[in-house]
Image (cartoon, rainbow, N blue to C red; front, side, top):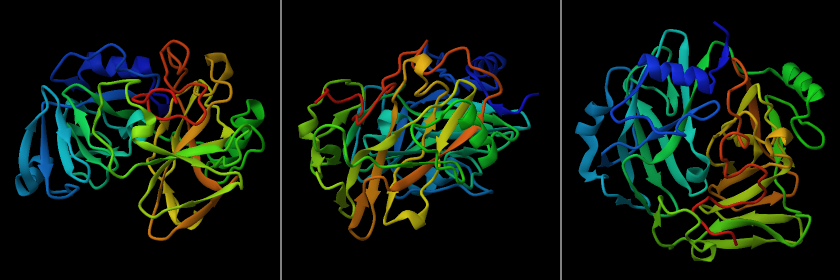
Length: 359
């Protein structure tokens, strides 16, 4: 069988065969070009602390140790800022040998500074589903900036499936860029495609947003509903640099326009400590077709979710802040991001999550 990230048609075949199962029928649109959206189950468990299970324990074992109280999500419930919750998902897996999974928060969830990570039975890592895993899936939810209202069936996370070796090495990535440019301007390729921050916009001085520390609750079901000014402070500069405050959360944008060709996907690599006293907050997936001109994505830039750590840090225009790791697909998906499916962020620049009205 061909190695690579599995496509939408292969994911549907996994559903048909029972490799991916669910306690409620799957919904239209749940299968994306290279991923499956995962749904919150019926109850949330408020726990004392985040945890991993380790090789000898299940999530149920750990919930027995750490649960403080249970919350019914059927009608929607508030998950409070600064608290940790574990929610069993509606989906479960029975992966064949040779197939692994990787999960991340969906774009809108990361932009709300909502920390969500998949955990499994006998697991050593967040967001990684081991080869041949057979069992339930759970999501840890920890709102960082805003309390949220969550409900059964909502999709906060997505999962991709990999078969064999999928990642392009730097030589292959350079060849891909030479064949079909994957980034505007010069490609900085080292352990993936480097991308930098834009602090010199073509017009105006608005370069980002900073989360307000004492904002109200956000109902995850309400789209284009909230006034940005109630939750965010504008970040402006005419100097080409800003100072990040410790503990603050920022929405910024990459200087480069990024392209994911139809036969590839990409993952934002985890933070590397050497680049500074901050991190680009949540790793995330980029679907085949993101930024691709023929799918309506010319000029799509990466939105950066940034949190500063212990010391104030000067972030300058053009500073490398992260990298994209490109992966090959097993084949071109039936649907592409921004073409056959509605995509909120195709062709994007600086943009808040879809829960907010356009400023």
